[in-house]
Length: 122
Image 1 (spheres, rainbow, N blue to C red):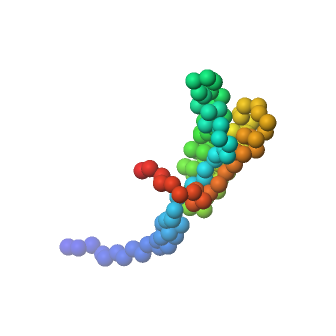
Image 2 (image 1 turned 180 degrees about the horizontal axis):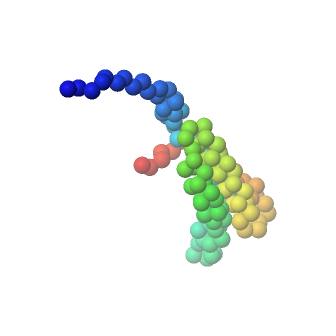
Image 3 (image 1 turned 90 degrees about the horizontal axis):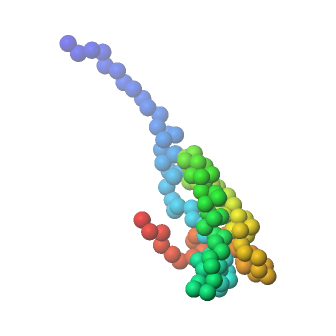
């Protein structure tokens, strides 16, 4: 003997919207300096000790970025988190940069990933 027939209607419109919102290119920002000697400052040379400024800046924001990114459920939210993090890295990199004439500090900047031709490994 079969029990009563039950019909369940599921409104999956919010799920469908969430899936649609998360499709698209990953948000990418590049924080870089525009001076020829920035890499030598960061990594050092055989004649000069390293004076890192970019890696420590990234490490300063890593945990906050990780936490904020976990809370993202839309591509727009992820874009905002990536944008804010990039500008935080820029600010800390400028603070960490070795004292110079200001050329290196002033050259540190954020650009959108699509402004450069590169591939993200993965």
